[in-house]
Image (cartoon, rainbow, N blue to C red; front, top):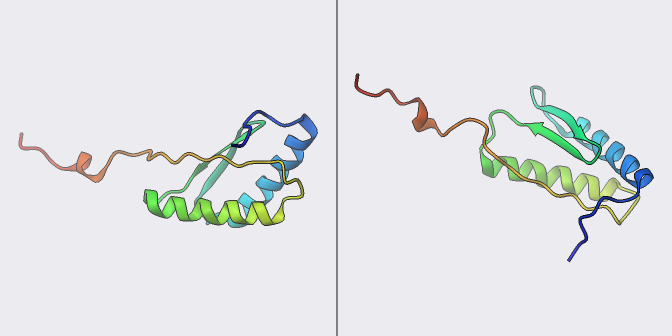
Length: 94
């Protein structure tokens, strides 16, 4: 089981820069990425459902894993829908 504690600052900084480059080269026009803190990025992938988001993040993770120089870094990810499901927009009898 991997240890999810933060790596040393230098390793974290290099890994974050590698991930930033992978993200910027992998995302579509209209996608948004921001550095949340020194160890996290936040992505907005509009127009994707949860299954499509998993596929997109799989591709990003594979690119990072093949490009990274330090094998001690682990990517964790979490996918959440930002907008409510489509039934939220149904009209209700008034």
